[in-house]
Image (cartoon, rainbow, N blue to C red; front, side):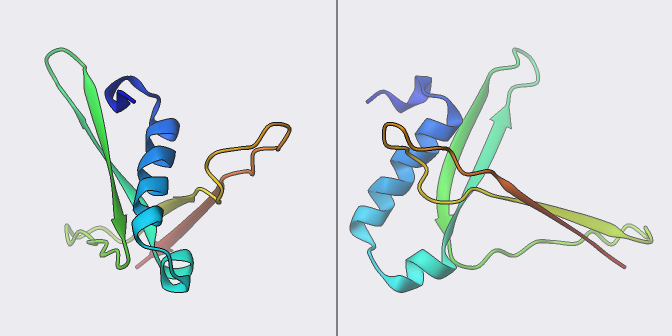
Length: 99
């Protein structure tokens, strides 16, 4: 499969399935996820996404003297790929504001 031309959700599902095939455990099921990084060329507008598994996610909070920082996380419930007739689960969005 030429993953470069797939939509991000399909590309993410393929890469997560490949990772899960090599790393089957309860720890992976409960504590690991997949992070999307996206680069966009400022000249031509072409973008490229990569997907990486993670167990720990460090989120830097900027110290630019603002009163609050907001963090938004979007949770994509498993399974990514659907069987025929199966309904897609809704995305869950979480947001937290910290001083």
